[in-house]
Length: 150
Image 1 (cartoon, helix red, strand yellow):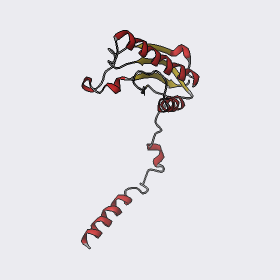
Image 2 (image 1 turned 120 degrees about the vertical axis):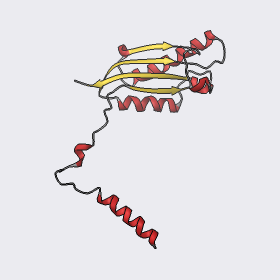
Image 3 (image 1 turned 90 degrees about the horizontal axis):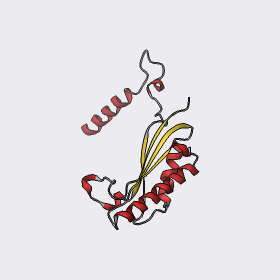
Image 4 (image 1 turned 60 degrees about the vertical axis):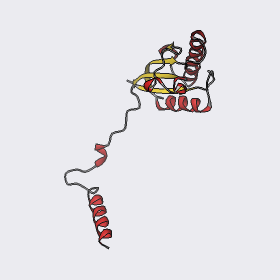
């Protein structure tokens, strides 16, 4: 029985702290909307040896494109990466195809094509925690510089 009283007492104190505070008419002034029009980084992952956008990749691109809709997109850096499977030339070409696939999808979503810098790093540019887990290297990194429209 004592346990129930303590829990109820703590709950009462918690709720009591959520009420009206003298001198403060509206708490919404303390809560700010996050600025969607800011620098952003996201990744798009691929299957081994593939440059075709998967359904989850298209969803990630669509979500990010929607979040930045209405923003001034100043620059977009798309870096295609590959794992260490195959030779250096093959990985470089695969990285290029991945970067182009993501760039084309973002342009199709309405992002300004002059803002893009497309880079292919092959298997040498990919960084992963402690250099392990090859599937993490099968991706394209997208770095966006966006700001609110003036």
